[in-house]
Length: 185
Image (tube, rainbow, N blue to C red):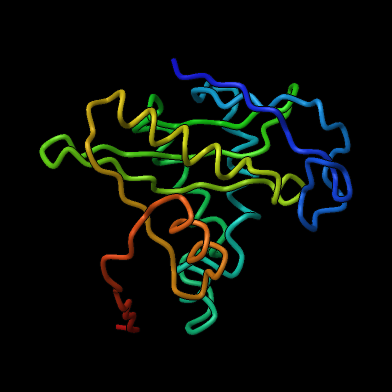
């Protein structure tokens, strides 16, 4: 079981600062528990997955170009996250505030390459810009180290400006770009 406690930053204008999220909780003394996923967390995680990836999802890009393909893109994203929760539950982390799930990270390992993969990380909109995403990524890296991994990878779409700035700030180096193609048969 993985667990670490972090102190949540206060609202904008307080000494801790929260950036530009005025709907975030106001108590600067709230603790965020970054911990291992448990089965009862699933519903909250899947709800976050449905809303958190707008504008930064390959499935959304496909839907914009071709229309819905086998259902709405948010359902495809939810299913991808659910796949990781079912197949790699010991590698998933949640950020918990009191009894609420504020975010999650789904991870994978490739032991032959000593490489961990942070496959999905998301924070509910009202808790963004409060360091929770950073703590989930840092927690994921620690969990992957504990599993014997020596490297970690994460990817984002070029259109995800926040991700393109966020991951290098955590020490990730860009190693390449990939172009995705899609075609109607």
